[in-house]
Amino acid sequence: MTKPPLPLDNTLDVLMRLADVIESRKMGDPDTSYVARLFHKGTDTILKKIGEEATETVMAAKDMAAAPSDENSQALVGEFADLWFHSMVAMSHWGLSPRDVVAELARREGLSGLVEFAMRKKD
Image 1 (cartoon, rainbow, N blue to C red):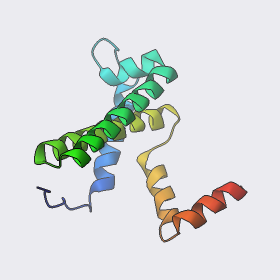
Image 2 (image 1 turned 90 degrees about the vertical axis):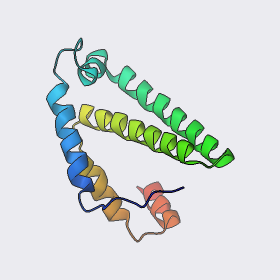
Image 3 (image 1 turned 30 degrees about the horizontal axis):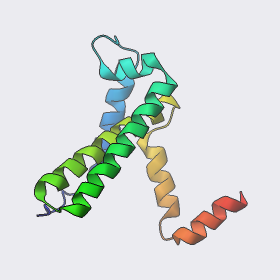
Image 4 (image 1 turned 180 degrees about the vertical axis):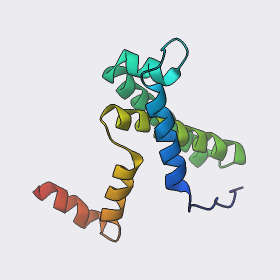
């Protein structure tokens, strides 16, 4: 049912190429570019898309939990991809990149989730 994972050594490269595409399109024509349309409509639209995609991801995960299958697995992966994409649009909106998120994940690597959460509460 589950496909073997793809090599991850180029994951950041893929994310950075996608970030570059988002950057190149954000000031484009909203009539011909979905990314430009999101930026043209503004912050609320960008954030609403993240909420919509997060909800769709949760629903796909619930479908997968109820009935594991290749079809439901692929649907869940697709929803995660949509969520990541729209999150990257939001990152671009605030001048952030995948490198920023990966650096934060690297900083947290090896920390207990409970310890890391407690550290954030102190700040």
